[in-house]
Length: 165
Image (cartoon, rainbow, N blue to C red):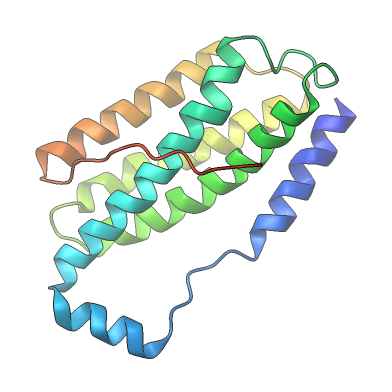
């Protein structure tokens, strides 16, 4: 359990510096090429797709397959799950900010915020040594609900799993 806590802390610290910074020239070029609403929608789809893909590939599937039941049997899987959880939290935060700036996606801010809280609760449970399958299924259900709502607003989210070593 201590091993998993250390891994989660290291992953969180490593990804804490990830922020959205852009140079003025590329930002200006992007906004002149498309409307702010469509840019927000595109960014939302990207960030949500990355977050949801990371969840399914590095957290949901390994837990369902029992690969995270013992932190010492699959160390690399535990490291990937910890990194994915930190990455997912960051991407959900970015997706929520993009949804908030889009009138058509503003209704997704609250579900995204709830999903972020659920991810934090799951990480806390994992640090304690167990992950509730109910929490895991709630996360999957929340993601599916957000995807459905986004699609009805014209923003289809395609899951994209980021590559981890």
